[in-house]
Image (cartoon, rainbow, N blue to C red; front, side):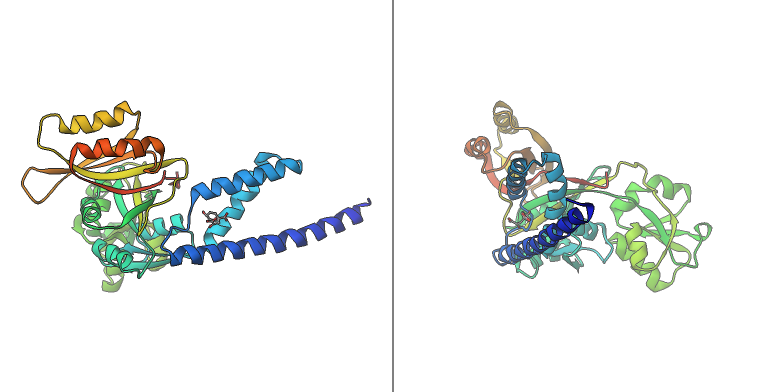
Amino acid sequence: MSLDELRHRIDQLDENIVKLLAERLAVAEAIGHEKSASGNAPIDPGRERKVLDHAISTAAAGGMSADEITEIYGSVIKLARQRQETSVAFQGEAGAYSEAAALAYFGPRSVTRSCESLEEVFRQVANGIVQFGMIPIENSVEGSISRSYDLMLESNLMVSGELNLRVNHCLIGNPGSTLDGIKRVYSHPQALGQTGHFLRQLHLELIPASDTAGSVKLIKEKGFTDAAAVASERAAAIYGMKILARDIMDNPNNFTRFFALGLHDAPPSGDDKTSVVFAVKHKPGALYEFLRILAERQINLTKIESRPTRKKAWEYNFYLDFEGHRQDERIKAALPALEEQTLFFKILGSYPKARTEGK
Ligand SMILES: O=C(O)C(=O)C[C@]1(C(=O)O)C=C[C@@H](O)C=C1
């Protein structure tokens, strides 16, 4: 074949490929509506793995390598995810880190809903106003967000996913302000804690507020030139504000872990975690007995946290994350033995292990 003929052949093939891709995306969108109607998470890593394996074996028959088809299908599945529009509630004003986490996890086309409080996030998911809630659960520097843990205990919502988001704090002021003129700084206590060293050097008065982006909005509305806020670059852009200093975290390895909460947890993906909460019996070695069951069955513990029960002084609930899905045989077999060691035992959900955004 001549060059012209070969190029004509490519044009014909591309026409077919593009038509098929458009059709595939439309089908993914329809699947998204089905999932949304049944309250299921749009992202299904187990299914994605099967789709990719199927593509790899089909490609092999046509003389294409696994690497080549994986590269193409990575983009196809990413775009399919984005077609599955999802509604997600988060605490804080537009521009909050929780909103960035929701968009990173559910895709940039998801519809985010700002809520005043974490309680409101839980309420909106439970009442079906939105499909999911994105809540911060712990920070790699400041530790656990206790309110999130307490609310999960009371609620019937389940964890369907987790995400680690890199947190890059900026000091943000009104367009007319300068770093020298700043006397006070507003932000969420966690953000003030994560930037304490930088803020102390400037001898600023720290004013805790309910969220990072909300603080940017506040100083904008008040027109303060002697006050700034600690928040993300994205928050500064949303409110048209000036970045007075970037990357002001004491520890550059600052990540926040978020949970995607829904009416159900996620189906097994082959690489999952499970979160549980329980109270142990009042006897010596009760917690040890619980942990021994995990150890004997080679179940890897990834986090343990205790919180006061708030029913009786000095009594605690334990929150625990371990590797594996509650439907995996190994985990399923261990659950009755674990529950046996407790006064109460609740599975918060099984979900695919986190990807880390912005590493
Ligand atoms: O099969 C599904 O459940 C889909 O939503 C389709 C699809 C895909 O494009 O292959 C898209 C997103 C999911 O995470 C899994 C797979």
